[in-house]
Length: 170
Image 1 (spheres, helix red, strand yellow):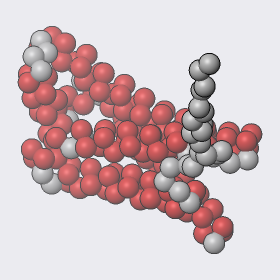
Image 2 (cartoon, rainbow, N blue to C red):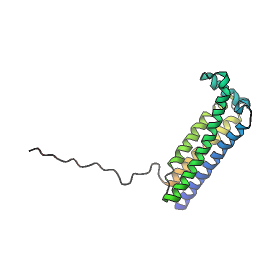
Image 3 (cartoon, helix red, strand yellow):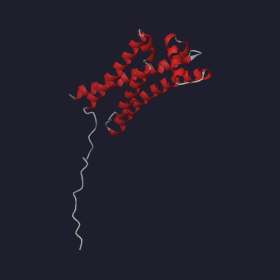
Image 4 (cartoon, rainbow, N blue to C red):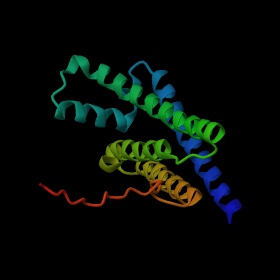
């Protein structure tokens, strides 16, 4: 059974590495375009729709697109940092509770849901990639939970309440 738990944890780390590569490469690919993601057919329309909805002036929409690219790069870096943190804790302390990995996978799932707007508006292959990323987040989270053997680490030692003491007044 411990071998299966180690394989599950390793699988979760590999999927997280894949997600980090996807987000980082997508951010770097967006940086190669002069208008970032605004030039992409359906994605640019969704970015302009969001910018109009939250009342961003038209001259700062390119800055808004650059901010979205920065968020992609930061999410990729956060997923990589979660992997390095888990490796450091395993080497230095002998065990890892993968708390940062759980937060990173949750953040990646939220960012994937937020990026689903073009897929919901236009459908097609945009929505399929979002569903694939969400499945990877859920699978990695499930493997990480199975690999460590618990959802929330129990506190050691268990907290106890002090016994009430009777105070006598003379």
